[in-house]
Image 1 (cartoon, protein in one colour):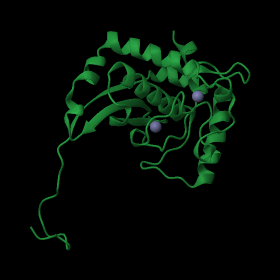
Image 2 (cartoon, rainbow, N blue to C red):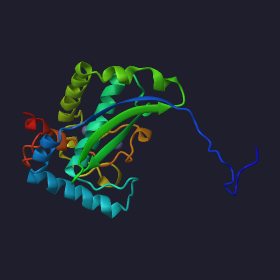
Image 3 (cartoon, rainbow, N blue to C red):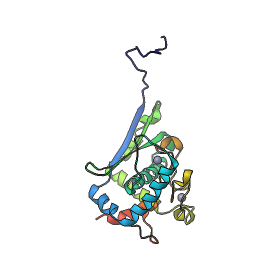
Length: 209
Ligand SMILES: [Zn+2]
Ligand SMILES: [Zn+2]
């Protein structure tokens, strides 16, 4: 077949991928009560300033908010947990964050595998999506948000990683292989999940009824 340089052909090349995933979203009421705490905005504004200064762009574009930092860090901790519990190599798992505020708020996380070989069709992820198993998994994720083997250094960091765009997040706790992350392993901070007594940031789990 001749190369179609002028774009005349009526077909596109395609690749068959095998995949499965876990999607979940957070309760909007709970999130908005959590978001209204003033200390969260201060910390995320600091992230947003640094992010704008780097000139980094993602597609779709993002605004760094407490909601985004919470979802993104949760997604990373979940991928790390799935690596140990479902046996997937972390590099085969990918994240997608659904985050908007305003009239049509979204707060979802999709962790999926989509690869051209059988690693995508083992069924392990779908199996873990049943409520009994997923809640156990999520509970370990929240436990792991609490600590890092490099604490207290990791938790107290004013800025680490590329362009100092991570705070309480390092290779020992929240980073994942580069191909898995949609945002270059930046904009991560466990403090948005676990809270921080010295700055008065609330723990997300405290908002559960
Ligand atoms: Zn760490
Ligand atoms: Zn990521």
